[in-house]
Length: 400
Image (cartoon, rainbow, N blue to C red):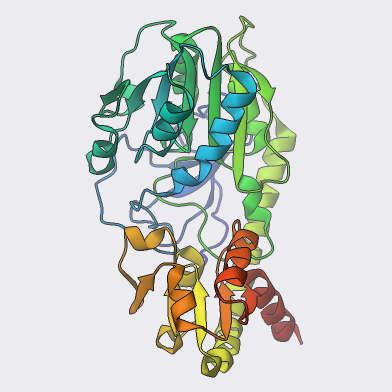
């Protein structure tokens, strides 16, 4: 269950953004294997989790709606096109340039860049040996199997630093950003991508957002200030319509760092955001029981669910949905890493055409429209129902 707001008192750890000793516990994530507590900096409003550890124990994949979600390591591939499009807008990809790829994961970005930029040379930093091998032996690529905080690189070596959903894992993100600035050439670019706390305000949120592997939780305001405090000039700001990600293009142009002072408005925003998250999540967790009942009534029509991740786990765990009533459980990406979820064998989208379900439930938030379009092509006669509609109807029934 949601544990709610955490009673406040100050901690001794200092904030990575403003360097103040002003961290106050505000929320206790559910199912945290590390016993993490989320803190808000009472000076600048940056949300961060304690205790900080420089290396987590390597645990098996956990496809969970709780804080223990992780170790699947496939999500960065969804952001490759966004990063490559940004490079096309700002860099001549036919030129000779050097790239530092921070947190290379399974190498999706590297492979796309090698195809698009015939003269690019890449230094790939990936500490997880379980996936780093994906980058080994790639042309024009040097693989460094180490945490970025432990890698000493030459000053002014790179034209581009690319960091996708890595900064939130670091012990001291401001220090690492400052080092990214150092290793860039004058005029060099930083391509930075991170989770966005704006998702906490979603009406339909039910999964635990504060997962164990994330130590820092950025709003657009706090990450913008951290970039400016480490000397970067932002040339492309995040898309305000994207509640899940904060995507920046910034450059090293010689400007002086702007020290991050207090920001009481951001502090208040962070506190209100957590309070809203706790209330919405608790309400939605209760509503999942009603969602499960509605799905049970659809089972005779041969029901399929597309999306076996965090929302599906929450449906089974909190809503007590009987997964054995499914005709099919589809997940295009997760099936490569996990064979079963709650007793159901995962299949790819091609399974829809073979099984011809009468109704397909889409358990996805960010990719719902894309999945719906694909479902419509594969099984045009099936009714398509979105998770967002299910949870909305369930709340209305609960309120009646």
